[in-house]
Image 1 (cartoon, rainbow, N blue to C red):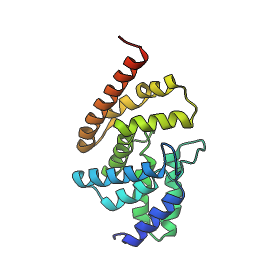
Image 2: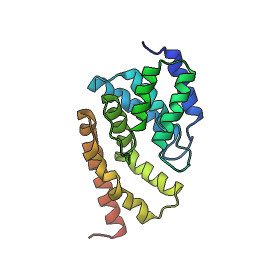
Image 3: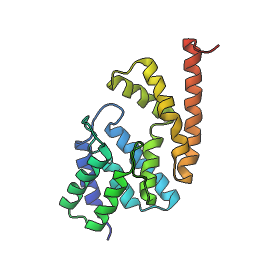
Image 4: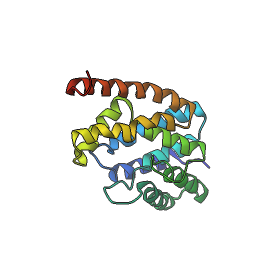
Length: 194
């Protein structure tokens, strides 16, 4: 059973209300992840309905609290979707997609849609947008300049090798190259290397 467009619009409104409007996990991030999910989903022949809904709700519980936002978000998404009258089987699929999207998760994404959301979320942490988001995250968390640059080695430069889909792997290569150029320029400007 397909979800009607008006239900997806309701989900979009709920997600927008419950998502930050600033910083590196803002509504802009959610929109980019949504668009990437649709793009990758079309190429990989995924279920676009599940991808649209899960991407809109993937950061619904990222409100600065402690704990795993993906697991909390999956539970919150389940409540929202059941309240909107979605079939329990579809809700269960969406919950599993959201629950496994996080970079630091013990549960690996198994379905194609879960892999697509995980890839789309990681892609948004790479390239020019990734550079911006790393800086924004540094500001939000009061990280030092060196700590922010260190985040590239800790996480961002590892993302290319953690993509699941062929489409995301191709996109990640280009974004990875950009980050390397950026870091080389940073090193040059602050005199870390001659």
